[in-house]
Length: 323
Length: 191
Image 1 (cartoon, rainbow over the protein chains, first blue to last red):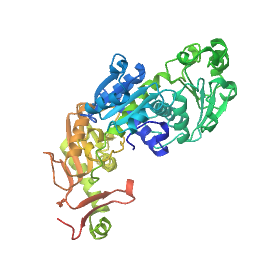
Image 2 (cartoon, helix red, strand yellow):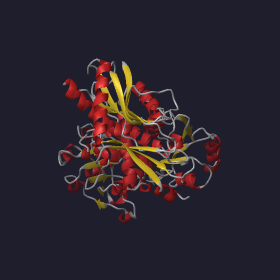
Image 3 (spheres, one colour):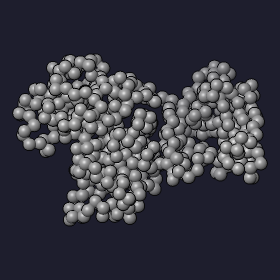
Image 4 (cartoon, chains in turn green, red):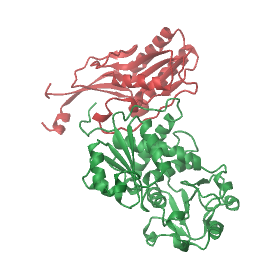
């Protein structure tokens, strides 16, 4: 396993399967009365969040705490960052505090990469979302959820060692602003799945033809083939009005509603990385239907992040291998 | 001497062969039943990977002798080990507990080799997080000595005095295609 997790592309097929298998064992421990494990006792994980994201931060915090690591939450708001401190000076501070891992969320694409490769800190760096670039742990939890349902038939351990070969995944919506979509395409491709991105032309990135996936503008046509349908949040905060005519128009052409649910195969699951705009990209019927894994994804997020922290931090300084 | 030359001059000897392993497991099964006065309330938990196969074999023997099925599970102790920092990261093995759990039961931990005792210590910590057994016992196929903690097995297949330079390897049909316990030592190497 490598030292950092910066991009979903850092993981080859076997490494990704290792993370998913590890997460599966972690998930088992989360059904117990005592959920806490002593594994990372004495290690320090710093959550360095330059952007608000309660969901992701709490998920990483829960994961680190369940493994007995010490967690320090460092939010840029109200810190010296808002007084103009640079990423470098923040990093040097974290280094002095003895961080073993830094989980970073940043509005600028590439900030985690800079932190990991600049030599400012020795610790492992985990990308918790950078700009419109990547969100690898979200992709891992999505893959974990898909594997559990589509390969393992929801049974513990049944999917161990397996990838998503031949599974068809349709990712719908605002691909342009979505780090989740990019990380998912990269990871799902490594795991052998076939991904189709469905979006209005204005919400597909210019170089999407270089991504290892298919694209389409027609949601109705791609739904009957899908094993999993992932709806992306319309990121209103990143948008001016020019991307599509109106919310109503978007919802009509790219929203998942009761009619479109009926186009799906019986086993197909409905996913959403959250938070949802109910009534925009997904109707309440679809969000709350039986095949929706949206709540489950949140729980799987903790298990997957436990697995990532375990794999990055539990090993020693690669001294001896005996015994 | 290079590493390759060193491994080229290794002496190996078989200390247990398939029939002996079979006899030893039958004896342990009887000992477990005798100590527990029957099979009631027993749970066998194997420590991955080879302890799990041994636990299943013991359960078969117990079923033959006593006519009752004893629940078998697997207990991976990796996340409870105190030496994680001294080794490259390990992948986790399966933990599977019997549906009725371990509360109020007599848990017999089963492993292939007892050495430093650190695995067993980790297993005791893991058990404490999973429930409250009535009692915990330890059954091992081979005890090779060199304990680093005050831990001892209740049921031992074979006591095997070894030097620290020696290696004990257990091979089982379930994983390796055949049953055998081998001991190997480097020849002419530094002691």
